[in-house]
Length: 543
Ligand SMILES: Cc1cc2nc3c(=O)[nH]c(=O)nc-3n(C[C@H](O)[C@H](O)[C@H](O)COP(=O)(O)O)c2cc1C
Image (cartoon, rainbow, N blue to C red; front, side, top):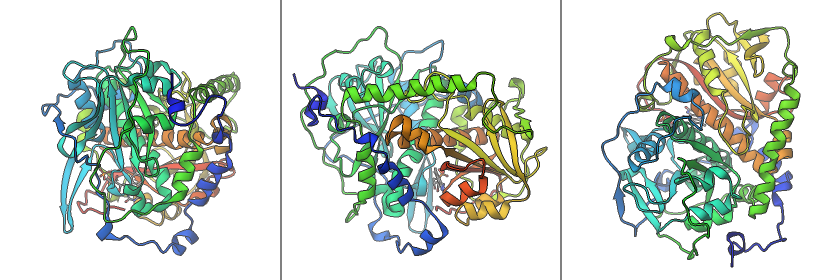
């Protein structure tokens, strides 16, 4: 019998292990850094006549409408952000709950007109509001949804069926029999069409695949937790097998992550993967022409896993990571933790704002202008507390281990001197690295924008890429970016839950590392988000 890896053209014993050749990740990362000089030298301009559509529209598939009436879980957002990925009391996945989860992750929540047209804003933040990430479902029979492979179409809140029948075993096999995929009634696959974001951001858009998927997944995990639906992020899978299932043009599109959603026990699916007929699905052209960015493709290919065996070995990296973290953790302080530790002081349960996750997602936007006002230490602490509770993911192991460290530039937080800080995970405390008013520096580091200078605090996620790539090969780059972005997405939600504002930002890579050095020496910036109080200016300034 021909298995998925063989169908994808890779025969047993022939694994090339490109993923281990980590120069590729360094080449991509270094080649897409922003610096003052790179920005000045870049001659790229936006060809508005050729702007890609922010939707992938299948021309020959009939939309299947999703339920219009969506219910609220009523769970306070800050509680859903604290909930584990595998809740104790679990609820069966029904199509109504699935529709709600899709809406809260990638649905259209706001429409704004501007002189050139209309922007349909989504539940999660996205670089440039270009919305290049699509969600696909691979499910067995649900109460009112037949087993199949579907694309979620936010433009008309519907599903397009690509394939009929239960194809979950293809993903089970592609994931190296990862339990959460094997058991899931539904798997959600996130994917990017590169051009939809590269039109503006060129090759740096490969980072944005993970950033913009991360904010969607932060919403998805919170929405699922509020509905008591287990959800686990899976990054280990055979890329070509997923491409084939979804009929992707692998030069232009890429699957980014899987989420095993819900728990079917005992395993219900057919063990033998169905025969997959090769398929291409006609879609509307995104724009007049498309530009190929080979650096994105090269990075994606170099971080692809090629067989179920390779996936299993890859995942063992997480287990090694986990035991290493535990050994390091025994009775010792965080490396370098000094004497200026200020413990987090999160709000007590009875003090927490009660706004539901649904209200918060509907209210969320990116703050366009911050008032230079203070937030409280309790508000900042509550955000950091929620963000550092761990993500249920195959590359992170069971405890709250992380590939990223959190650094802060504090401008205006009550009871916290302005300055640069690092968050010490084990001590659950922030450590002052240097005191001072760094508004000008923060503005510069955030690409010379006002948002990071005016916010109350800038939260940076930095990864030790040598460590991540050492454990996970090039795919460690995907993991570090995605983990940081999910945490960034959680910051968005935790800020808006406390009636604060937030905005993701881009940055001058090496200058940020230098700013936080020596503590941050050798680390690379994965994600930046500014938090503070909105100045309530209503203008739209999409950067
Ligand atoms: C990772 C990330 C980086 C972003 N970078 C910037 C930025 O540098 N400047 C800015 O004004 N907005 C930035 N944004 C905000 C987006 O422009 C915003 O999310 C998008 O316009 C959609 O609007 P919404 O977040 O209000 O729904 C960023 C958002 C994300 C998720």
